[in-house]
Amino acid sequence: MTSPKQGFGDHHNDDAGASSAASLLRINLGAVAENYQILKSRLSEIACAAVVKADAYGLGVAQVAPILAAEGCSTFFVATIDEGIALRRCLAPEAIEIAVLNGVLAGTEEAFHEHRLMPVVNDLGQIARWHAMCERTGIALQAMLHVDTGMNRLGLSPSELDWLAQNPQAMVRPTWRCLISHLASADDPDNPSNAEQLARFRIARSRLPRMPASLSNSGGVFLGPDYHFDLARPGIALYGGHPCGGGFRAGPPNPMRQTVQVLGRILQIRDVEPGMAVGYGGDHRISGKGRVATVAAGYADGYLRSSGGQAHVYLGHTRLPVIGRVSMDLITVDVTSVSEGEARPGAFVEILGDQVTPDNAGQAAGTISYEFLTRLGNRYHRRYVHNG
Image (cartoon, rainbow, N blue to C red; front, side, top):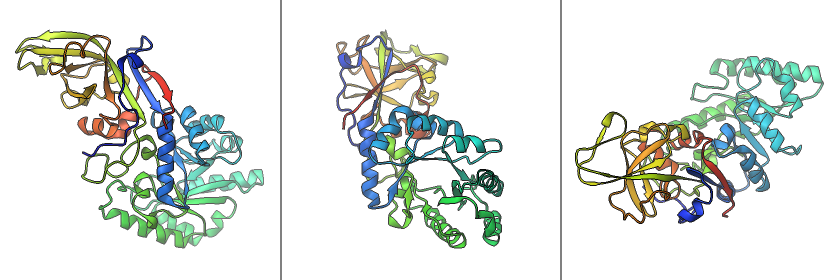
């Protein structure tokens, strides 16, 4: 696997241990800003939005969104109306657009209008609901229209698209800000479904009233200009995730900077003898005399239970295996290969960061970087840094 761009550099135990926190989460807002500019450079003159749903993928939307706005981002995507309302409190200016991907559910129309949110309408019922809201207010309120091109999740189905193309009067009242669809396999550039979805999207666009278009997510930005249209809406790449495979497929180095670093404090060092068991269920047996460190991080902190016996952490620049089961509050690490001066109570190991990226951790746990980031727990002592 290729090495990511460095987001934090070396960490030092005295720097990390300024408080009594058992574990520390550093979030590099400067790296988020740089990632946004990297994506913009790929898009030339195409506008670049930002997907900040799920609390900015776990990093903290109240901190992340203003940084992106300062970098020139004026369109933000969230999943739910509650996320949109919270984001509007952070981003008040009229020029900032906030689009809600789940659309306008029954009874939420007034809240959309009050908080200046834009629904991404996903079916004919939502179109009718927003049309009626425009009638009541006497305003051609903005909306985006989502058409499904192959994911079979949200968006107009082929039959709904047919009906809408034959009944254009249903679209008269709203101001249509954008036609969008979502690529299912953009992180795999060689997947033929990308070209298939692109073709379907172009056909759908030709059948509807003219409006700007948006197809590219993070991976789509790297698929090339054919996929860019008028607005890109990256998510995971902003937060350091590999936009083209996340480490599961061979490919180019990750061009994005890492944005998170999780450090866990060593609570105890134990000498172990051959044959001893470690952790719940005795799943791991010690093969030779050595030492085991117990570290303050567990699945209550978002460190996935499936990481046990598969993942690695770093002490300094030494890669160390996580052994035994991950428990609610603790992991156990084989520190036999490092000196007692390095592996000592109070020292910190890097659980996520430059050396163990969320992509690395996701692969070891049989999942993806998205899950690790969005599961970051609230027990970490959070620090926001601005290392540009």
